[in-house]
Image (tube, rainbow, N blue to C red; front, side):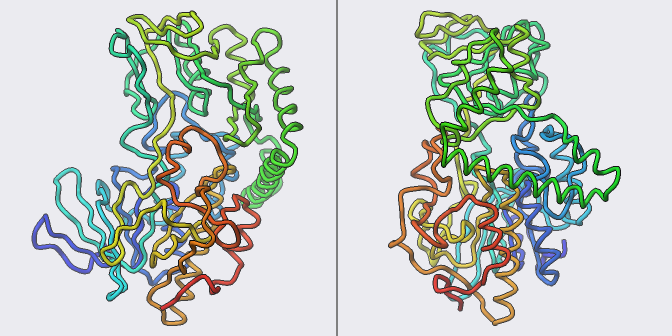
Length: 495
């Protein structure tokens, strides 16, 4: 591997020295490596990936119907057009897209698979990070020294999803499954299935499983806003007959960015209008067969992330009678199903707990600077990329109100510009000034009230009240700042 400067004499004492170390080979890590390789070709790069394949989320999740919850024209990389016509793509196709991107850009040469990063510590005297990783197969240890340390680990814990303890679940005689740990050959043909949850995973599972089950029920504690969108991008499909694919991709990407921004802005400015638009659209698709109350949340649009379904597949499945939705709370599991507090009973052979994620930044890595542990909740983020007062470290953290990858692209472009600026001026380190005066209690995840975010408030970095410390979640604003804005400012310290 071209990043290794010292060949180990013992299996347990390997050491590498690189310029840029990326943790994670999912959509963020592969994208970052592509940018660094292209924009900073003299830099030595390494990627440490705990799994044995690229893809991250799209390699981990294997449940039926797994798909994106953002349109692929904005979820794809800016530098590599997504050429399929589907607006929302399935998990295997997205994983293939990431693999193809890594292969076409010769990124695999940088990756060491099966490596769990345990700790990362920065020493001011040397201006270097020392990162310790363990090979989970043979338990050998790899020590990596680097100048820039970049976390592209996403925002949730890969080991297990969130599952509350339900009363009586030990008495249930059937099978309990969490989507994050889906059994490879789960047989649900002819079975009664209950899916607990109302988020993106639940609304995907219901139509994907309904044709094989005897009946499937979505059991939700409270409703979620659900938008129906076209299955295929017909306009782009027609334009490709006359224009190059890259041009059509750029046009579709721009169009969808503006649509996303406009919908989000309208939802915040006029929540009542957006609420009525969404509910009227749902009502027109459900007709009189399904009670609209199951899709009428008590909160305003974008207080939690919206769910999208291609061509109303969830609504069609419910109308067909193959599936049903129940809004209620669980009293207890029994041997044969779930007893609800309303008195209703749901029979089940299989219960799927689509109850969400457990958030975890940095993949659980212990981070220290000069032997001082860095407590993430005490830190602000600078331009939602750098961590307050932590030298030469970045978080690749995408959007919560738009496609994740939109932010990955411009964050990586910013980091390339930052490193180039440091090289041109002979700087070894960059860090932000302390910013306690700007601190708020709002996290980097913004104002979303989703359960998985609220459970992790005490684990997430905070955002500031203004300027470079405030997380805008606005692509056009971030584009101006990260891609075109000046590098040096009065909040950064270069040495």
